[in-house]
Image 1 (tube, helix red, strand yellow):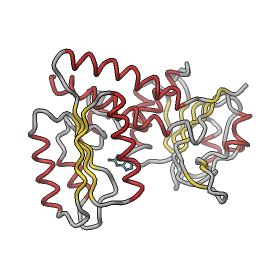
Image 2 (image 1 turned 90 degrees about the vertical axis):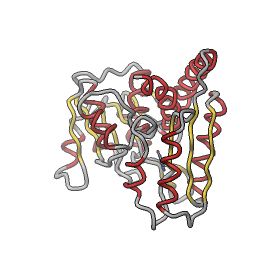
Image 3 (image 1 turned 180 degrees about the vertical axis):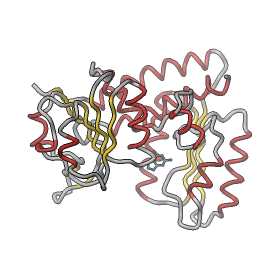
Length: 282
Ligand code: GUN
């Protein structure tokens, strides 16, 4: 029987654990605070930002919302970040991406204090992950590690193949699997004979960005398959990078879309907000 990894349930459990921790911190006199900045009114970003605010509310994290106009200059945005970096009562800062074209995304992300970078995008945090130091870890790959651990799936010694090399998912995913003592291969658009590589995987993480590309012939019998993709198919239904119907019967465990990796990202963002309190005390 294939184990369907329930990201909704696991993320709910994590949020409940965090709720207790936040209440305890409050008793100690610390109110965890996240500042969320959205530049412009991109509808998809508004949905994400609202979900983040709702999660904060559920857990008891104070959220400060900065919904600033599309025309905001890069300088003004950097000044706002400086102000939030300097505020003792702000633990986490999140700038929702994408930013309008006239603003240099890299410059903005680099300006957030690494100690408040709850997205885990700052080069200092990426470097810390690379050499095994403490710091914030990018939320989606951190969430995938939690899905595996909380589903009783051993990583140490396993052949892990990550398809995709983005800074947000592929690269940190590979580093985290390595930290857990997996044997890791990163495959990407220029990989030759992709199927030969993916068929070696005990744990296959698909972050390709192409709907249903990973069919059964990419997967070894009994593999664990993690699907990071989220797309709408021809019938406007959500689907992932993995062709679930053909792949699921072949796996020992698989994440569905929706309800797999997706809900974990916000749960791990909330985890990073709580973690920020101790990181800032170090
Ligand atoms: N836009 C889409 N996903 C993300 C994310 O994880 N963090 C931020 N800051 N912006 C996003």
